[in-house]
Figure (cartoon, rainbow, N blue to C red):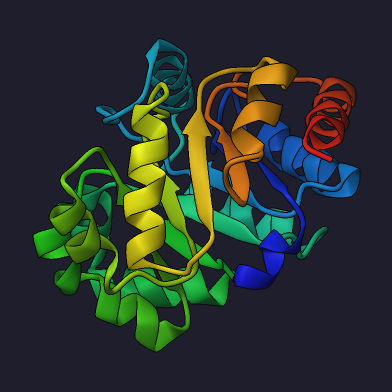
Amino acid sequence: MTEIFKQKAVIPFQVIGDPDVKTTVANVVAEAAAGAPLIELALPFSDPVADGPAVKAANLRALDGGISIPEAFDAIAAIRAQTAVPIVLVTYTNIAFVYGFEAFANKAAGLNVAGVIVPDMPHEEAHLFAPFLAKAGVDFITIVGPASPDRTATVVEPAVGFLTLFPALPEPLLGQELGAVHAASALPIVINTASDDPDTIKTLAQKVAGVQLTEAFVGLTEPAEVTARTIKYLNAVK
């Protein structure tokens, strides 16, 4: 997946089924057509962690619409019928566990999902899921949070694909964290941010390989607006 980061990457994020599957599919196709090199899609979950009110509300809208996990997978299949843009799937431990770790990995591979992120899975438990993903050819994407350099090195050592930093710490803490990560891994680094400010996104992009926009695309229902925002943020990081 590292080839995605030959240029600065802007990574849209949205919850599948918010507010409905048709909108999700149209938005992702619009993002891909506008030049987004990678898109993160979240399976709706009742209690998402590490997310702000906007993302939690998006999950609730999707669930209130009655979407199921099989229907969310069907949405990815509908996206795949229109674009081959790389997709990273965000899920939660309970969803993958109930579905079955091996079955989930195989389903993701069948949908040509490039990677899976599990925000609530501790590093010490990743071995329960990551090997099934690896066998299926799907990257288990590691989240790096604030930690000591030794802990950071331990967390990133088995990482593949790219590393995602959350939250976006203020300076000088962000610089210190990036220094520890770079000392331990040569993988591309993505910073997650809730900001929709192009200047903020540009500043973050200068420090890393890509920026994941946690909230900037959440709740949008018009593909034209999705297209315009994608282009705006891509231009900001050039």
